[in-house]
Image 1 (cartoon, rainbow, N blue to C red):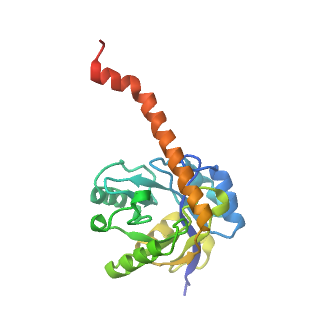
Image 2 (image 1 turned 120 degrees about the horizontal axis):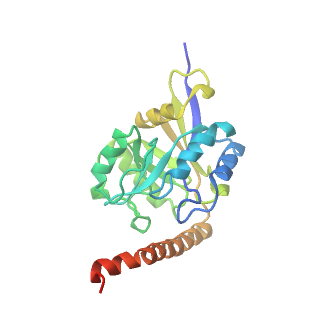
Image 3 (image 1 turned 120 degrees about the vertical axis):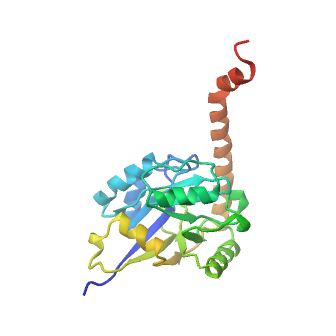
Length: 248
């Protein structure tokens, strides 16, 4: 009888394609392999190109390739794990969940209830495939405990993730995923991991970042997002002027 394969997956990681990310996917994959993870999901903000590339490169590092993206919905951020196309951003939460499922992925709510990080509010969180009940970047354990209580009370599978924006922080939190009926880890692919997450076959593990490091992360991230937004607005300034005032 085939046994079960268990893999350590960090399902919420950012590359340099995110406005607040720093490292290339090659460096992320190398670090993941070095510290004993079996896979990562690069979930950049509303951008999927580098995640697709990471999933293609993953086997070269002995890792399972799983693409994904962190989508900005009308209610807050949502992880789309196992998708190969970027869901349309800024749509209603429920519609985005359905789109992710139609693409063959799972919809996991990251850092819920934390509005400073665009977490989905409690009253808007419904009908998802999982909740991030352990995020290593939270200042205190209160938010993680609250997320865990909510997930348990509502029957949502829990996941843990590092939410790393630097390669060196990979794996501080991870989800141990069990894929039933598989004799060896090397036989597991990304679709198997996504199916296991959807079935709730995961357990959470991890530790938080030190508070000073988390504070620095928040401040730097806020500054980069402001600069990124200003740059986008600046690039679109001629369009905006044209729309408002025409040709004069």
